Length: 535
Ligand SMILES: [Zn+2]
Image (cartoon, rainbow, N blue to C red; front, side, top):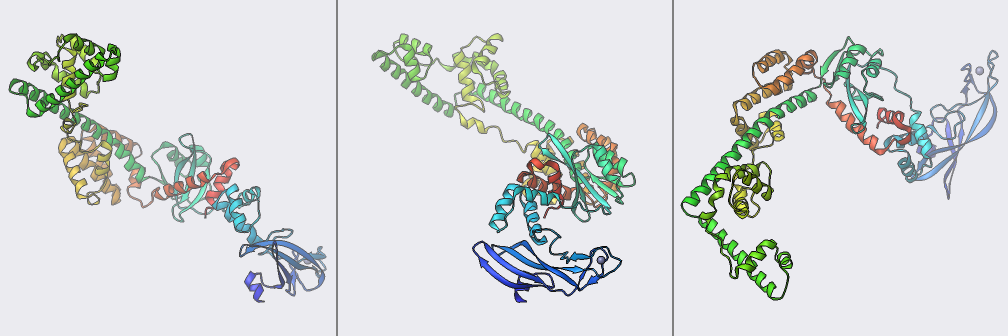
């Protein structure tokens, strides 16, 4: 009896003997219930006709395989009206007629299949002492029955991708029981509508802002109210806001750049007029030393007989410079700055072009020549290299331009969150952004109103909000509002009802995980089974 309860056998089955062999554990079991019911007429019978043996594989015990040698009986049906004369006793909760595996053994294989995939499942099962094949695991999962259609009052619907961005399916979630109720192989309106036509008692459908599921719900469940998902609403609002902010931040950036350029050009010219700054003087001095070192190197290399081209390569300067230096006979000092001042009046143009991204000095030089510049190429180059904020050899200048407050995307994040959710630093950045332009300030107010409305479920305020946007002259928000207007009832419901697609998104994440584990050749039907019966 103790062994019986240890192995957890059904009532009436008694362990007679346990043998531990090299391959596992063999258990002799006999059935002892005095009567059994005829499967045809359900009449109990105690008249034993004969005994026979069944060999069953059972769940492993402490990692050892377990084989049951089960002695069962055949009974004679004593009901004279029954056509079944002899019947084998049934053990319905334990083993199916004719099966060679116990039901609980099969269930373990199914669980392994649901938690892993075919091949991985075989490996895991082997570790657990269960011998099976990939095909068996897949068949077990595929044999799982579909859940019978039950009443679903609140349905969440969304799409998911089989292959990122290529092919999509539809996921349907019961928002009350929080369970996936079905997967559909595409995201066509007609497929979803056909599904919703089932007798489900649908009261409300939460869906994205796309048209397909809206029309599916309209066709398939016209009685149900539709709720536009709040996350999707915020996402759309965020996109509109990003457009507006990007527009203003770009203008602001240009304005700042221009101010810096103007300031620099002025500074340069005033330096010229008065005196060269000590910093520039130091820079000039070190540049002279560098040039002198190059000169001496050129002379030395010439003495050992290198060609001009070879010297140029070795020293890293232009061949024409080598030529002119050798011809000069002595170290050629740079001409005084004042003589190179042709470039002054072109400086704003040069700075602007550089800031626009044209960093080709030779190209810029040609542009200046076309505009009538008569100075030297070197003068253009030196001015650019030394003085521009992005000048390569003068990192001190790169800090002249302050970093932008935020990218438009970061700004959207700050604007969409409720103020109390932001840290002090974020709040300050937000405030500075708002000061940039009255349109940004207004957009912030409108967006925050929408966020509050969404957060506090105040859908009744939507009309007033739309009116405000209409009179705001903010094209980006107006375009968002136009989208809302087209789908206004659903948006209002979404801003009022408790349901939304957050849970559906959670299930999509889980689905992706299952999908990555592989559902291979069995394709969509297997994926569907695994998601519907996910552990
Ligand atoms: Zn019978």
